[in-house]
Amino acid sequence: MNSSRDLIAVAVTVGALALPGPSIAAQQPQNDDQPPELGFFVTSIGIGDGGNLGGLDGADAHCQARAAAAGAGHRAWRAYLSTQGDGAVNARDRIGMGPWANARGLIIATSVENLHYDNSNINFEHALDEQGNHFASRLDGNPDVTEHDILTGSRIDGTAFPSGEDRTCNNWTSNDQGNAWVGHADRYSFSTPGAPWNSSHGTPGCTQEDFISFGGAGLMYCFAAD
Image (cartoon, rainbow, N blue to C red):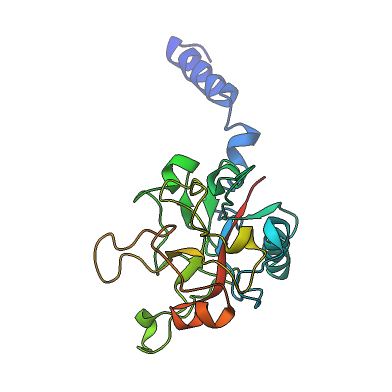
């Protein structure tokens, strides 16, 4: 190695060997492709006693049981329901901060504000039950059957109705008196955006038969609040 050209060649070779390679972290497989865990669903079945859900506690327990059946019982689940009168509760205040994903990993909404009005992905395509299935709707091919009425007792912004006309079946404890306010889970169907997902109309009463006759089955929206 007697020439300057040889010295330069050695220097380049040593420098190349000394260059740092990719970091360990950069070589690790990324988990970004993992879908988010279940955070929202329409209950596959109702409690079956009309508007008597056992109050908010009973409704929450039903959400928790359905989530557990789908392998998501480790999360804290709340029913999207408002109550009226003294100590009225707003549905929007009891469901956590989001984001929430459905059973197929699609984000339904990123926050409470994003959830309300026409911002969320709650429609027939994405409002799935805890197992990832669609609820019964005229959109699925049977023109005589729909269970798209979802109990909420809420106004379009997710707040409770004022005292007066009972729109929560006596705060979800009655199966005979009052009526229930419902939303339409299959909006973006007959018109755009369609009836609000959380606040569409009242039912004729609080019996299970009242719910069925008007296009429902006493189903609820459930959200992971943790």
